[in-house]
Image (tube, rainbow, N blue to C red):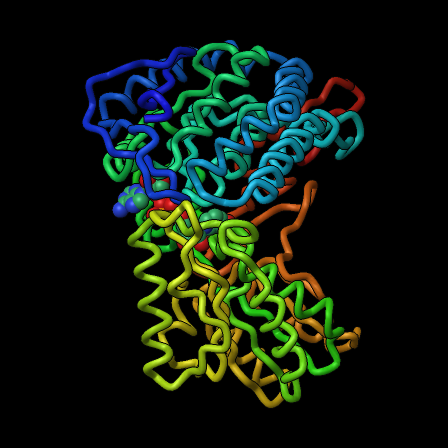
Length: 484
Ligand code: NAD
């Protein structure tokens, strides 16, 4: 094995326990590179105990001091970017430029956390003569973040810097498919001066997640993953009265109008559906082609056809994932859809064991097909034809998901019309991946997000803190009034 077995990180140390374990694969070659322990409620309990012990000291440290750790952490992320990039590439499979962009995004997320002291000063107002109301924000206590496989470095950093800078102690449960980056994040934070117990890592799968949901010592959970598991975590976590923000899966629609800029639209749509091998919750999944858009589709086919698996597009995460995606394509084809670009049966010389698929574009798909409705999570774009923008919006609105939607057009009126009517939390115009950047918040609608608030940016401040409303009267002249 290239890497030693992964260990839980409890109270500032990596702890080797005799736990059942799973293999960790490099998806680009299909070979085992490490092992990941499957923690039980016992390990979760140990993490909660040390987090609880650390909370008093950490939460009473002024926020301007707390964020100093994150200034140093950001510098460490940048200093170690090559190594962190290589680790993401190895455990997740994405190509180096995508992995590097992910680590840079983690640095940007950390930069936002460093700005929190500038953003969160409490509100204060003299509400009647001599009487003042103010709001101060307090951390919740011990909190947890449960993360998916597709961004091993970035998604943990959606929660870690903000939750911790705001004074919480956090337990991270990374995806068991990509557990390596999490350990390096913990090491870098330790080097940056984060005190013991403020961050814990508990590896594992279902059992560890259930123990987090049930533990009475955990106040809040952020979850990112599939809608199926987001619902489980939201239901179980809130049943034990926790605050839960659970981000789920997606089926993102790009509405392409006939007036859209040819080259920009074709390249953006293909980049959106194929980036990170389509394993992004913001990836284009359905293109709704409005009226005469054949010239744009032809240009997309050329773009996709030029992409070289192994160089321009990485593998998907597992052999099962690859087989599942291939089943969706075969079923659509059997149902009468036309496969314009077929990414099946690709091999990468020297990496024959890798789980590669090329970009796949399927035309003449109808809204009732499974591939048009369910999340495929691979480099597959389906095209649904529509006569006008209202018909296109009806297709988008019918999806139970609601992460992202975009429109490609040169008309400001059409752009505004679609932005107002799309049923998604993040919408774009002429943007294939409309991810809001800090200080704006990330979060979808409908079955793409359960709970109130967003996971990053300003939206996360409300989630990771509780507000105390203070009313004071120091001026005797204020006398007695209806408020007294
Ligand atoms: P997943 O739901 O399988 O796993 C996510 C986490 O849940 C992992 O830590 C895993 O260990 C745990 N888990 C898995 N099955 C469980 C169960 N039955 N009970 C309790 N815990 C369980 O998701 P994934 O395959 O790792 O990631 C891909 C999914 O994540 C896609 O659906 C994608 O759209 C979604 N995603 C969403 C966003 C977003 O912002 N909305 C961002 C990234 C990924």
